[in-house]
Length: 297
Image 1 (cartoon, rainbow, N blue to C red):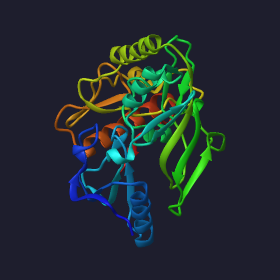
Image 2: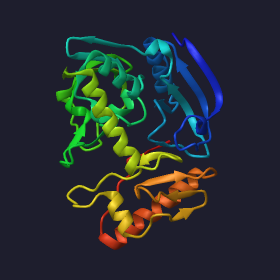
Image 3: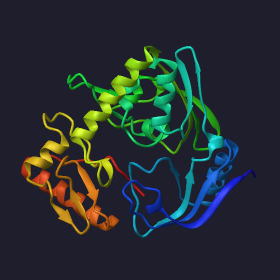
Image 4: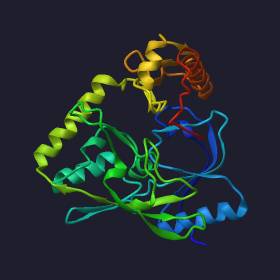
């Protein structure tokens, strides 16, 4: 069985999450090839060992008690590649979104600028159908599922398969489901001007800096915007007067009410308690149940 790669035991997850919280996992494994990813996932399944595929750590709340399983980190340079053929781009799931966008700008390929400023990896972005409101102010939600053509995955049996994007039910902040591991993706883009593409990326990044708190460790927006509601999750939390509300070392950002920030010494327990308090307050005030968009590990 091919388990080529690097492994560390009792690796603290706080060293790898954007929230800067999380206890040790049983094993932190960085596979050196797709076959090693398949072998590890197959071994874990057969041995009934929990495993979690880790990308950039930007949408995760890791428990301070640790993770009693294997974390498969797809960070090896040998697992990262990007290539273009015409307006189609094939990219490994482990490639950081920023590097993906830099490649597109250099190639003069437009259509993915709305991803600018979103942290993490391409695979994580597909899993959550990452997106944002269009920079034009049109309230149109631009999301990754719009430009995805197909994916290469490891299925529940650790077999490599190709899936057309049309086979996936993409919805608001919801991508492919199931116990799969995304390996590669193909995106359909369009020809554009490199300088114009970079300018639009800068506009998206500037808007995020204006409206989001980037001075502290966080995991971005904590709650999804409720469907059918004219107000965003952040607006509902703000209307409850919760900006600045804190539990231990965690607090609601004064800049964006849907951001929980780690002021330096927050625990995962602080963050979870704060999330519960926010959800309870919004439910009490507006009768709306907020749904988290974080992955709890």
